[in-house]
Image 1 (cartoon, rainbow, N blue to C red):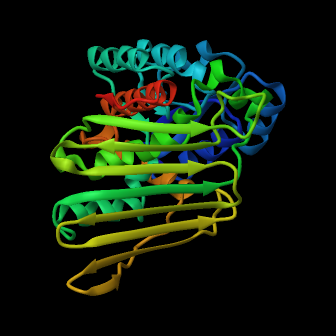
Image 2 (cartoon, rainbow, N blue to C red):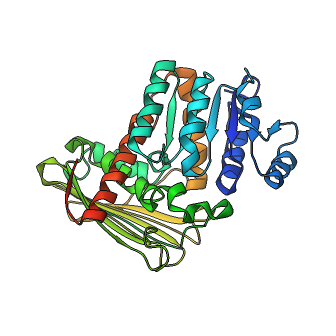
Length: 344
């Protein structure tokens, strides 16, 4: 693949994370940024300066009318995902939707059905699945390195979330729930790691807020995700800490894995990370062939998506994976609200 016959991408949203998407598209062999939609005038000016020659639009219609654009990435606040994604698919283009797919599982099903009917790809932005670190752990689990998986702890300790443009992330109607922000990745990761156990069967969750004026915006969240046969995963995070530190510890019938990632912030280009495998009384470092972190994984997603469009390779996470992740978040939120175990 080369830049002489690239897959042309449109991008909706040139905010803090949208800028990284634009950079990743331009850096991807076989891809080209062919248009950007951004409603904020200052952000449009920044996009024009950063990507001279790329059409920058204030409205979606002009981008979707461009027949050269094959796929569109949506990087908007959560409440804009359904409308933008539906418009992209209606225009006959493939869709790369940042997580969460939509605010509700019912809305996610709308996009899944629409993509299926149109014969278009719907990629969900669950980037941990393409990670050198978290993905390598999955490879080892699938290869039987720890036997049958029985338990996982996936934990995040981090700075508070950025408020987002105009503070959208602190408006509960726009964000949906904070479980849709970061825990959605870990619920998806647990489901992926325990795929051999089938789909999860129940969830129990707790959460609280350190902000008296924003009780719905939960700084601390923990959940137990149960699978058939007794396997379970514990997902826990706090937004009341500092820096960005994530760990996954997975044990099975014949061994264990311990993965760690740390950075000054989530989007650092200079993280530290490691993966260790324990079996037969020995602890062995597992070599990783490339850096790990969401700024790197974004590039991995675009390379994978280009390959999927060209060759039919299955996506790392498709619309159904995205829908199930949103459903898990809904059910975890129901458990937080009721204080009860929620069957899935």
